[in-house]
Length: 285
Ligand code: PAF
Image (tube, rainbow, N blue to C red; front, side, top):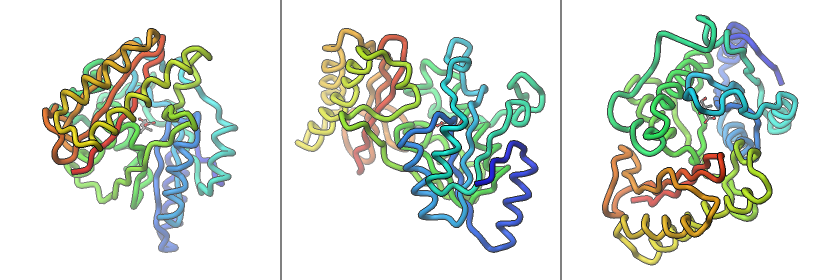
């Protein structure tokens, strides 16, 4: 596997692959890779001739009081996981390589101006999706993939990227991949590493509440407010949990819905101690 740290190395290799007529898949990550990321790489390897994974903790998507400085990193672990899963190139740029103005700052952003980035996570992370769209857009321009792979765990991010791709006419297919869970149900996340043993146990309340919501919908509940209320009550039974949001929204626009009809995303963000975790399920229309 090639490890590239500069944009020009990536461009040269991509050009060579294109000359051979090969298709290219991109898996954008912020590193500290786990089985959830591995499943994205596996999907990309199955669907594309060559896979590029970016490993970059993107400063523009972190707010001033968020965990940019403490975000977990492990280059060697990431390199090995990517290699084992058949990734052809790891793109591991410095902050200055991605943001040449220095200090992880830029004067040029890609931003969706409707309400999509203001719903759900956007309420407490107002600049987050602007940073995500900006870095993903840069990665699309650098790698020029045929397909890009994102996890359904970040369902709002996935919907926003689909919208960006549509609005900016990127000729890239966006592939959403299912949430990968631990054996006990907790959704895999790089941030799970922040949890103490007691918090790790308490964090199960997220997936338990997700499974409860799914069960209610499977049994025929159509009132989104009742589903959200039952899930909320379940989470509130855990003393270490503090709800940021539990919401049912339209799966495409992210606008709140009252009825479970069409494609609906039921999503949550919950603090366990100081760690903010997210989880969701989708009801397909
Ligand atoms: O989902 C993530 O890890 C990040 O938001 C992404 C898409 C790699 C952009 O930095």
